[in-house]
Structures are given as structure tokens and as C-alpha cells.
Length: 239
Ligand SMILES: [Zn+2]
Ligand SMILES: [Zn+2]
Image (cartoon, rainbow, N blue to C red; front, side):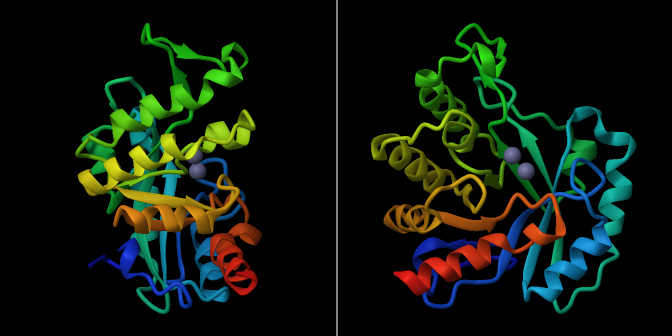
């Protein structure tokens, strides 16, 4: 089973010939360096078959988001299929996300990511207020909640804040339940070359639970477009 070439069943992947997907691209509409067109040219140049422009947005992004979406829709369909998406933050411990229908309805796929932690009192925590040893549990709780949100197609960079910002490695017994829950709710797990120290291991976990999966680079520059594909190919060669 395959959702538009972007989201796949992990168990159906051919590990020797992984699909050339990048579902995590940013452009100069937000904090990326390059235009939608330039990112597309880079995707074609590195042989990607399917991409998702997962532009950052929030509820207040209605003034520009339709123009961004129209640019992506105007791209050629071949040799690379481009989808409109958005990466939005988890904004409550109940799994609410920072979007509104005027934005999400323009998207083919909605990616939810944990970007800020929220304490048990419901208040957003600044990173410097966060005990690094609490990061894994805080990130787990928000991820757990958002997986049940029916608006969410993809969970972006699972445990990315713990790995990258707090240099904490989540134990297997925190990762496995999240992947099982993603599989239960049909939310794709994004395996990310920037945030995940071992993307191949994430693929194995997704296969264990027969989760949906997609691959992303968190690209903010042209050089990073397709980084996940190159990393997985290197990992496969060394395996
Ligand atoms: Zn993110
Ligand atoms: Zn991102």
C-alpha cells in the first residue's frame, strides 16, 4: 500500500532499493534559503521521485500560504512529483496542532512536529527552562497525543528535540510504543536524516510494527535536498 508515492508501508519497502523521497523541504517562504522552483530543480538533479514541500506554518500564515501552495501546484508532474504540505507544531498536551482549515485544506499532507515542549500545567516551556533529563518524557507525551489527531498524516522527526537539542537518546521502550501507536492510527513516521542519528534503525522499528513511513531531510538549503536518500544509500552500502 502506498499513499501517492510519499507514504509507504515499512514492511513493503525493498531495503536494497528504497524509494527516492524527500518529504521534508523548506523554502524561502519561511526559513529555507531557496525558492520553490530552485528546490524542485535540486530534487530533480538528485533523482528524487516524490517530494513534499513541508513548509512551516501556523494559524496566522493565511496571508502567504495560498501563494506558496499555488507555486508548488504549478510545478511539473514529472520527473518528480511535488506535493503541498505543511509542518506545524504540536501546541497542546491534548495533541492539538497549530493550523486552521484555510491552510490545512490546501495541503496534500500535514506533518506535525514537536518543536516546543509543554509542561503538565499546559504552558509552553522555553528550552533553557527544560531539564534535559525530562526531554524524552515531555516529547513522548506530545507525540503520543498528536498521533491520535485525525488531521495529522505524518509525525515529523520523532524525538528530534531530544536527540538534537538535548543530546538524549530515547530508549527503545519509549520509541516502540510511539511507532506502534503511529501504526494503529495510520500516521506515517518520518525518518529524518538531520534529526535521527540512525535512520536505518528507525526503518527497522517501523517494519517491526508495520507502520507507515516516509523519508525527510529537513532541508533548508539546496545542498540538503535529498540528504536522507544519500544517507540511506551510504548506510545500505556499509550494512
Ligand atoms: Zn521540525
Ligand atoms: Zn522542518
